[in-house]
Length: 252
Image 1 (tube, rainbow, N blue to C red):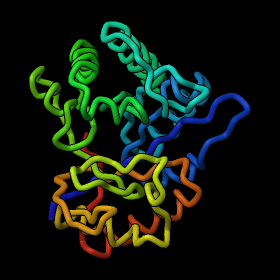
Image 2 (cartoon, rainbow, N blue to C red):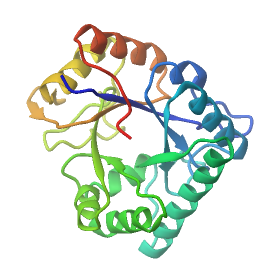
Image 3 (cartoon, rainbow, N blue to C red):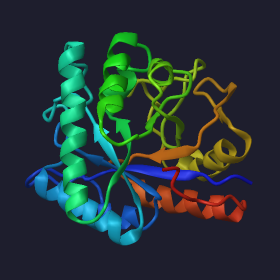
Image 4 (tube, rainbow, N blue to C red):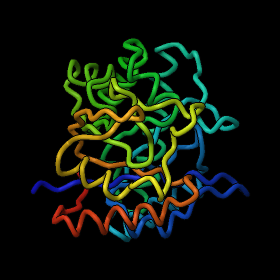
């Protein structure tokens, strides 16, 4: 059976504001989406997260976002394509420099929050993100939603694209995520998270919020680090995957 990656959003603490339990999560996941200062994270946190990921052999990814610290990157920002290109390249370059300083490297890019959702359907903004990644000196894959505008934009520009699925988020029938404003959008430990992850990894399917079953061809499973029971859910998922005989390893 093919291996599956487990990724998590980390390094999102900012100044005196602490987000998630990064140390515990890094012991569980195989890839870390490290905030680059636009929705969370600060220079000291970025550096510490890169160092910790290096020590544990966890792949480092640039978790790029709209410039929206107050809204944690979950609000759409009507930025021009040229500015979005520059913003993505700025964040990626900053994290790459931090990683290099501790003998590590950024190995992929994953958009965050509102940017992630926007480039699933917005061809113009998806193109801006893909162009920014393509212009970076290293060839990096983009982690994102299957069958999305960003997947098409990456394919058109020769940027590798890796599909992911969300362990702790509900899906609509079209394969997009249920908006967080809707009840039931965010799943918890009592929602069969572990079994859901095994089905995603082994069968390539997920049950939607309306009870239908849709196909998902994902190489990586995401658990959000800011969820209240994030560490417990990640551990349960890892144990369930191991019990099912599914190897866990970074995709990048």
